[in-house]
Picture 1 (tube, rainbow, N blue to C red):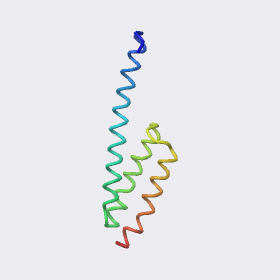
Picture 2: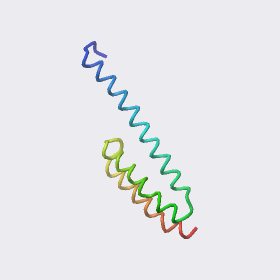
Picture 3: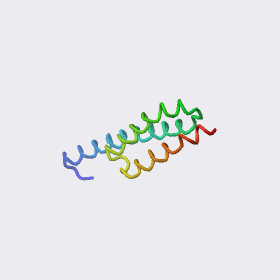
Picture 4: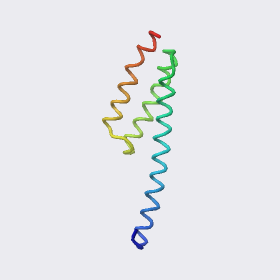
Length: 86
């Protein structure tokens, strides 16, 4: 690492961003996991918009790619009829 003040600041900022992104990513993954465990259709459809919003925010922040976000939301929305059959 260089000894310039700007470089040291950039390292601090990158660490802060990395921690924040890890927190948001892990929180969203936990929300997706919890959503997949729901078997009631009404509860599933109630929580789906919240989880989709979390996924969109990750894509907006650049934590995940926008296509990955679209794929995740698509898979979650396809599961709704399967929850009704269970």
